[in-house]
Length: 391
Image 1 (tube, one colour):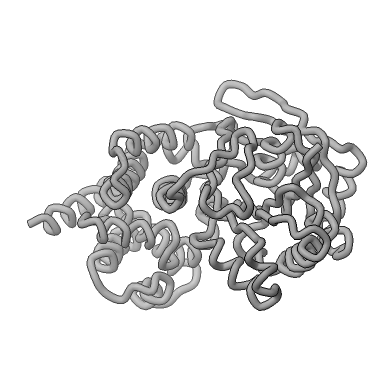
Image 2: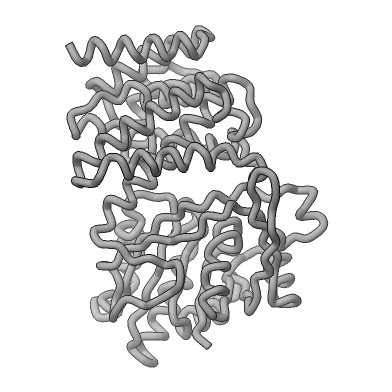
């Protein structure tokens, strides 16, 4: 039986990647530093996954699993050295902490077998492959590094934070939506592309990465910040608010137009993708909160991330990101209300953008949010900005 190592036994690790490898016939070893999770996986060698949707759910039992503690360097590196494929899904901020185990495992593997090592990167971070490469390069020889495939993926499944009441009953229980395909970068593999059910190699992959970050993640974030502004707890509540839905749909359409132009992709397919995402945002059974989706505003306003990156992509394609700027303005208003300071200075610092249309749009719309304006007024102001930009 082939074996996979999944570094990170959290929401995405158990709620998505574990299912993929279990259903593809792999034995899966999770590497995590949570002792309760590690111990429970080793006691049971399986865990429950509830696939949830509005109106019902189904329970899957993910089998053939075990775990090692990431603080046990020898065991973790041994697992990495021996695996057929490795995955990281620890969160962007934690990547640097897993590098020692990756380095140790890669060195053992190369010394013992010289088998290619492929790492599927399941992180919401633009250019995550380059970032991980920069961390590995000082620690590996040129030959060892040449034997490594750093394979970006696009995680489209939505997996909310576990319900504390449910985890009291079963700490391994995780809930997720049904969407179950993992696109990955065909051109990044070392030593050939493996065939794994529901892992879909794509080339060129940059389009998939930008579609995920600049349509899915961006629209999700806009929904979250507008939802918090309106006082909603859940994403599924916010997206059914007609004015929020208008702004979210318009922002995602702005980005879809830009991606269709830049990558020569069919616009109608991108719009259907947008429509599907908006329907998925309305999944009440996920219980996904605006606070979770909107957390870490500095990262989400960063230059290449979902709000600023999408806006700059629209401008590069000749468009005007007024509705994405509305989402950015709602995020900026929340950031300033919680941390103080000048909005323009905060925008410049967080986004790395000190002039131009995106800045002007965002600061103009920020004034509406700071004044407590209605979302109908925000829509009117965004429409006016577009009208003036197109004169």
